[in-house]
Each structure stands twice: as C-alpha cells, then as structure tokens.
Amino acid sequence: MRAYTPKDDVQKKSYYTDRFFVSPQVPKFPVENDEVFTKDLEAIKAKFEVSEAYIQVEQMVVFIQPEDNYKVLELMKNELEYTQLSELSAIDWLAKENKFEVFYQMLSMNKRKRIRVKMFIDKDQAVNSVEKLFRSADWSEREMFDMFGIEANAHPFMKRILMPYDWQGFPLLKTYPLQGDEFAAWYEVDKIYGKEARDIIGPELRDTAKVDRYDSQRFARLGHEVPKGTKITGNEPKNEQSYQEEGGVFLIKKLNKKDSVVIDDPQR
Amino acid sequence: MAQHKVNYTKDGGLPVALTSIDKIVNWGRSNSIWALTYGLACCGIEMMASGASRYDFDRFGTIFRASPRQADVMIVAGTLTKKHAEFIKRLYDQMTEPKWVISMGSCANTGGMFNTYSTVQGVDRLIPVDLYLPGCAPRPETLQYGVMLLQKKIRANSASRAQKAKRLM
Ligand code: SF4
Image (cartoon, each protein chain N blue to C red):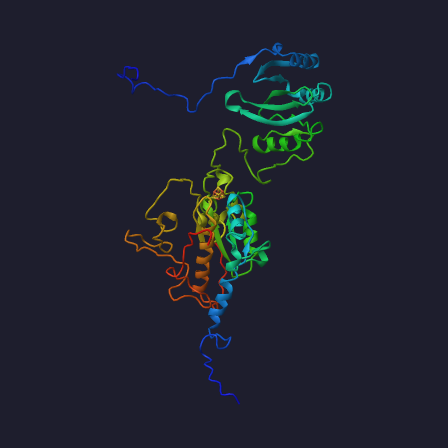
C-alpha cells in the first residue's frame, strides 16, 4: 500500500514548480586524479589564465579567457597532441548571466583523452576563428554564427550555413520561438509572392489537433469531401472513390474483382 | 476473287478503333504521366520504391524524369523547408502545361510533425495541389492509387478545352 500523506491543503500547495526536468549534476573530480590531465593543465596554466578546471565523465573541462582561444588550441594541437577538434558550438546563457558559453571539444588519438575547452563571451562579442588550426572549425563556426549570431573573426567565409542567407534571427537562441517569429512565419510567402499575398494565402495553421467539421478546405472530411467553400450541413453523402469510371476506359481493361484469383499456394 | 465474309466492325477484325479526339488525347495524357523526381525527405524513399521493380510504376506509364521541362506531374514527396521553398516554385513554373501536383505525405500536406520555424506548413501555400496522399510515409500502393485517381481526373476533363494555367494566385 502507498504511504499515507496528509491531503488537507494539497490544492494550496504547488507541488511542481520546475517547468522542465532539472537533471542532477554529474559529479566533478579534481584534475589531480589523472596524471595525463594534470600535465596538460600545467602546460596550459604556464602560459594562459585558467579560471576553472575539473574532470567530469572522464574528460577534463578547462575554462579559459576568450582572448586566448586561438593560442590555447594552438598549444594543445602542436605540443599536447590534441590533434582533433571534434566539435565546437555555443550555449545560450543570456537569460541567466547575459553570456554565451563557447566550447571546443578536443580529442587526442595518441593519449586517448578528450578535453573540453570552454569560455564565456558577452552578448555581442566575437571570438577568434580557429579555422586556420582545424579545418573542421570552418563549418562549425558558420553554424555557430547561423544559430547564435556569434561571429568568428578572421573566418574566410562568415555566412549562414543551414538557414537561407537572407534569414533574420538566430534559431537556437532560447528566446527564439519554436514555431518561428513573424519573419519566419511569412518567409516563403514574402519571398515568392510578396507581402501583398499574405492576405490571400493566409497564416500558417499551427494547431496540430485542430478538427473543424465545418471546414470544407482541409482533411477533416475524409470520405465525405465537398467542393471548396461549401456550407457543411452534416448530411454530406459518402464519396465512393474508385480509380476507374463505371463504364470502363478506352483501350484499358477494367479489373473484374470476381475474375481475379488470390494465389495462396506459393509453389504453384 | 475470294469471297471473304469479313466482319470489319468485329473487334480484332482490323486494327482500327473509332474514338473521339478528346478521348485519345486524354488516353495518351493519362497513360504517360511523367513524374518529376522530387524526393525531399523520407517519403522520397517510398516514391523510389514505387518506381522500382516490385511496385513498377512503368506499368502505368509513369516514368520519373530528372528535368521539370519533361515532366507532367510533380510528386512532392517529403518535407519542404523554407530554404527550399523558392525552388519548388521555380520548378513548378518550369514544368510545361498541362501539369499536376501530388502532395505526398503529411509533411507535404500540412507540415506534418515538423511544427517548427523552418518547415513550410503545407505545399499548397505555394503551388496548387491536385491530390493529397495521407500517411507518414504513404505506402507505394497509396501513391499508385493516387496516380490512378489522377488519371481518372485527367480523363474527366475535356482535352480540347483551352488549358487554363494553374496558379495559386
Ligand atoms: S510525411 Fe513522414 S515519411 Fe514523409 S517526409 Fe514527412 S516525416 Fe518523412
């Protein structure tokens, strides 16, 4: 039996406050636990300012200053054998602390280790491009620009990569609505037919659960379709759809269902 | 002189069939619907399957063409993103009249499960659609049935009537 909990004021209490599930933090360990990481961190610390470093899920996470990002990655690539940049992107913390977090995920095949280099930048701050060091940064930095609006200085082709070039807004910002803002909602109509066409084409239908039995234009009336704009009375006759006219078609034999045979013997 | 008693009107007597221009033109049109290869997402796989040997679209005279200038019907098979929207309009305009459009699958019909900023919520916002096929993805049988319904639709219209250009607006 379930344990009894007093329910006198249960409706007054808000029993759930978080809108989303807040997962518990994965435990962090000091860097000294791992020999290789300790040496790497010393090498980085010797030349650059490191604000925080720890080990999480067997990877070292290092927080650096945003001005140093190119130099740090250069050091890691040339001296510490972290020769691959497997991923690079950003996280939007604008609401919480008005900053973006940019991360570089590094991999060393020789040491079989991964390091995540992180840094915080301000809202309109640009980062230094690391495209000269790692070719993979080319598209990642373009994607970061596309999704967050963070520019990378000295990138050879700083343009959007996924969204169209004339798109406005940065879709991965937490403030960007999932179903798009005004610009996104009318993008294709404005571009192809012009703004005047908005009235004729009408807004997007975003309510997926909408069923309107008086709507003669959409799919709610399967089997009882009516011409567009008809007044619905509810007594629409059933539309029997068949792929051929009653009288048959010129030069084409009509299938007579009675004459067709279903073969159930595979060895026939 | 041989005294044949040939019944010329009996079928098979002579390779001649009497019909009206309308019917023969419609017969030709409806049985050679060349489709534009236009797979945009997962529905495209089902469209390819319909064209391949198991379902064999060639039986209906539907042959996939890689150029809109040779195509009669555009089968929009898949998710239309807003980035791609201008191209669907351009391809549609490049097709020669008479032309038809089949919207295949939930994504092409209504945007489907992609209720997001980057997906066009139904291709009928951009081009006029003749036939909507439900499903995610529709089976090849659905597409074949759809093509046969389209054939019926073509036959129902008078071929000699001046073709009215189909435009959304
Ligand atoms: S309707 Fe379903 S199968 Fe077809 S493109 Fe959309 S998601 Fe893919």
